[in-house]
Picture 1 (tube, one colour):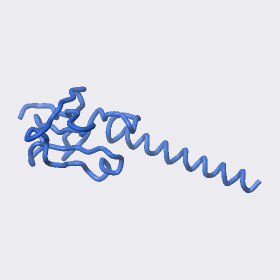
Picture 2 (tube, helix red, strand yellow; picture 1 turned 90 degrees about the vertical axis):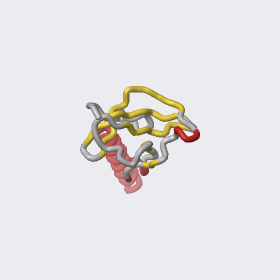
Picture 3 (spheres, one colour; picture 1 turned 180 degrees about the vertical axis):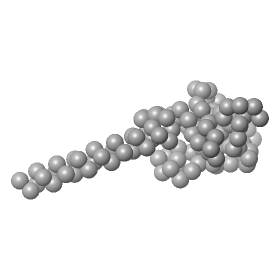
Picture 4 (tube, helix red, strand yellow; picture 1 turned 90 degrees about the horizontal axis):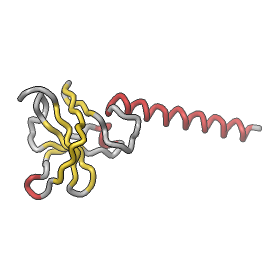
Amino acid sequence: MKLIKRIGMLAGLSFIIVLSILFANRVIYGTFNVFGYPNRVFFGGYRYDNNGYIVTLNGNKRPKYKVSELIDRIIGKEIYSKEKDFIGNGKVVYLHLDGDKYLVLGSGGGG
């Protein structure tokens, strides 16, 4: 009987942890799918939206500044910028997908 209670408590705790991760991912990235591409990211009060545009960048065209925040690194999302001053309207950041592939996330408004 004690074993059944422990298994039940462990299952309940696991469910709460998974649900918390899903909701946190929804709040931060706009999607419940922790393995999918984010719909948005935030930096310095600016929102960068995913328009589904995937680019191949290699050599000197590859973004060189890693701007991922702690939460991004914990769940394995690496976000880069081509410039140090990447925060603001009309700016772009890149989510590294695989190899030389990047998902473009842009902040609205004019530069």
